[in-house]
Image (cartoon, rainbow, N blue to C red; front, side, top):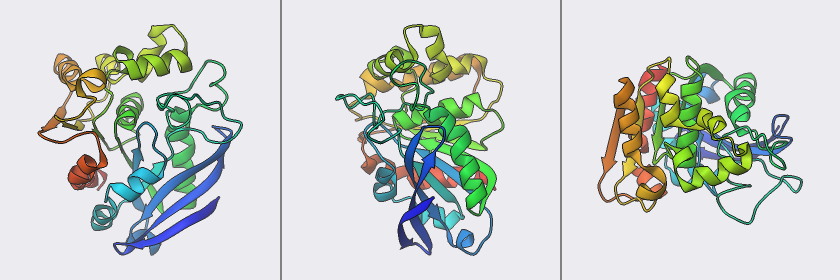
Length: 276
């Protein structure tokens, strides 16, 4: 590993690291916020943040304003890139597939299958690396935005007991039913739509064995609300199986980091309570 950025922030330090990922077969970057306690060697709980389409590790680090809240609550925040990168990694000219659009799945179809294994990277390789190399405890939470909100919810539902809490901003809750998901899943997973359901929050809720509460914030002025996000499907799915959901519909807010930065403090406090 190599640290390629470090900046003092709210008594802690915002860093960016790069490393060679054996899971993805390429070099990856991740943002890492270390609060003061971690800099002093104390083991701290970790919040994993998954970003959305077209993002890198930089978007959350530079736009969310999360450092002040992580410092307040003594949390480490890890924000990985959204897909494999490099000259040997397959790509597509479209913004919603290929680099920057890993969708947090393990691809099974050519040419994507060799590198596009973001599910395994987030669930297994990255936490193992963080817990081995930094003063991080095994108390984990997960959150994300849009495509990353989809990733956070599905990963938490598929791994009972691994995360103390989960939340999302503007998540793609039913990717098997909307254009973004249908396009990506067809490419990455093939045409058998039954295999898609393992990465669909609404579908996973039907057989969820853990009642980990879901905290979701959604802007009502979001330009993707009706076409891609459809939070009403999440509400209906949770009601059908009596799964705890707090769905906050925020009037006037769109899909941007102006929205995320307005409510990230509440999400971090929510995770901090669960992690402690």
